[in-house]
Amino acid sequence: MTIQPGDSVETSRELQDAPEEFRAAVEKIVISHAVNELYGAQVFDEPAIALAPTPYSKWLTCRVAMEEYGHHVRFRELGEEIGIAPERMVPGDKKPLSIFEFPLKSWEEFCVIKLLADLAEILQVEDLAQCKFLPLRNLSRMTMPEERFHAQFGEDFCKELIETEEGRQAVQDAINCYFPILPKFFGRAGSKNNEIYRKWGIKQRTNEDMLADYINRARDLVEGELGLTLPDVAEAA
Ligand SMILES: [Fe+2]
Ligand SMILES: [Fe+2]
Image 1 (spheres, rainbow, N blue to C red):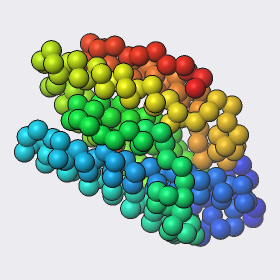
Image 2 (cartoon, rainbow, N blue to C red; image 1 turned 120 degrees about the vertical axis):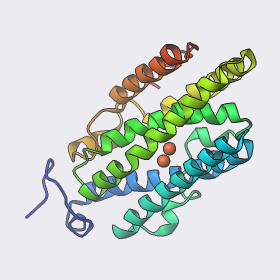
Image 3 (cartoon, rainbow, N blue to C red; image 1 turned 60 degrees about the vertical axis):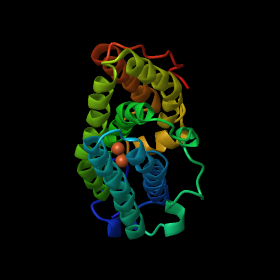
């Protein structure tokens, strides 16, 4: 039976019989997660272990780094299962998100990245947790508690840092530096790819809708929880 928009695809085997547009859309998402999880782990999480100021924070950062590498491994395994060549799932083949072009300089920056970039990841994973390709849905549901832990890690350490005036300034500077880059993570408004993802039920929401939600949730955290300022960004980035 032909797979129609709105139908669930239950296994990787079944995906091979799905229309090309559906298969290609799933591949794009799996590749993007496999690549970005690995980039993030290499550029931010692993270097942050050396920057963490105490044994306790180093231990927790090791756990975060282990989990981010683990996300890459799980997305890559799913990718291999659906026939994606391994070399397409590592940095190199695909242009990275611009956030990875900033080398990590401080512990404060890392805490802000976990607070705000992992919140962006949570929104993506929440959306994929309803995906019609069930192996991707299940993988997203497994990943979710760990992404929540990363964002909570960011919030807890930012709260600790802002107790001193110097820390407060460093956290605000890091927010000013990183937050304006993050809207790009949600893709362009009116995106053709996003239209295809929604047609097949791979994603549920438009890029614009997700971005607006992200900015509201980021504002609640930065202004509501931390009492700092969220810089203005163009919502239709
Ligand atoms: Fe992750
Ligand atoms: Fe994460």
